[in-house]
Image (cartoon, rainbow, N blue to C red; front, side, top):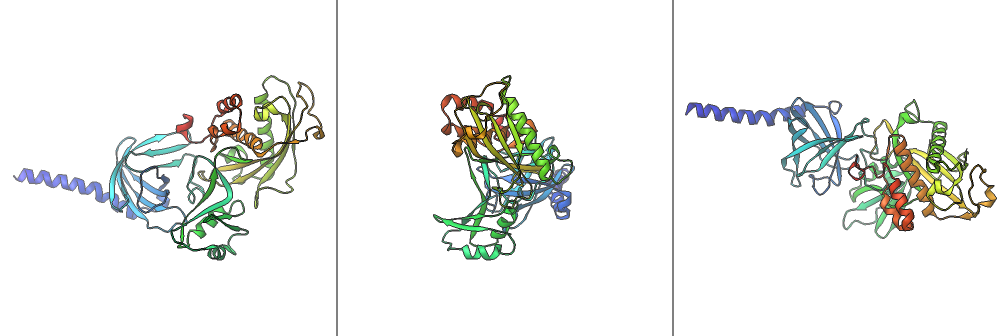
Length: 416
C-alpha cells in the first residue's frame, strides 16, 4: 500500500513538474530570450484573436514557455503558453481555445527553404522566417496568397458601427504624413504613403468601433506586383539606395530578356531614367527603367516589339524579415506596333510603337518579372499564376503557367 502511494505520489509530482516548470519559466522569460513566430488561423480558432497572432516561445531544453499576443495595434490580452519538446521535432503546446481554456496540441516541425513551420491537426500552425526576425509590417498585418495593394488599407467595422471617418481623421492627423479616407458600400478604405501603412493600421485599430484593418489585396494581373529578396542581393549595407536599386533592376531585366529570348539574337534597349513622378506616394527608394524589347520575351506574345516603363520601389510587406526587402514592380505605358522583330536589328524608334495596350498586358509583364526575380535571386513572391487564365488565350496560358518558378510563395503550392 505504501509502495502504491509512493508510486502515485511520484507520478503526480512528475506531472506537476511538467506543467509547473514551464509556467515558472514563462514568467521569467523576456522577449529578448524568445523566438517570435506568426500564428495563422486556418480553420482552427485561437482564443480572442482575429486571423493571425504573434507567438513568443522560449525553449529551455525539453521545456517550452512563452506568450501569445495579438498583432501590433490590436487590443487583446497576452496569454502565457507552455509545453514540452517530448521528441525531436515534436512538441506538445498548451494554447487557449475559443473559450480561453488552455488545451494541449501536438505539433510537428517542418523546415522549408525559407521558413520553420510548426504544424498541428488540432490548432493553428505557426512559423518564423529563417532569414531573421519579422519586420514591422509582418508583425502588424496578416497575409494572403495574392498580391497586396501597398498604400491601400481596408477598415472593417464592428456591427452597428456608425460613420467613424472623423475619428480616423483625428487619430491619424499629425502622425501620418498624408492620407485619404474613402467610404464605399459600407466599407472604409484608407490610403497612406508607402512605408506608413503599418503605423496607420496600428493607430486606427485603437478605435473601439474598428474590428480589423488589413491590406487591400487582389489576385490576377495588375500593373503592380511584388517580390521579396535578401537585402544583401542588392546592397552590402542594410539600407538600399535608389542608385543600387536602379542598377539591380536594370541587370535583372537584362537577364530576364536574355533568358526568354533564347538563341534568337533579337536586340533590346534598357535605359535608367529619372523618377520624375513615382506611382508610389512617399517612396524614399525607387528606380525607373525604359525598356524596348521583343514581345515574346516580355509577355509571351506575338512577334512584335514592346515599349514600356518599369518602376520599382522598396517596401515592407508581410511576411518578410528585417534582413529582407520587398520590391514593388509597376509596369506602365505599354506600347506595341506592327513592326516585326528580327535578329541583329536594333529596336525601332518609339514613334513606330504607338498602339497602347491595356493594364492586363502590363500586369502580365509585371507578374513574369516578379516571378523571374524571385526565382533568379533566391526570393519569393505572392501572385497566383492560375488567375491569369482569364486574360490569356489557352495556348498562351499554358506557356505562362509552365514558366512560373517561385510564385506563389506558399511552399505547398510550389512543391519546395
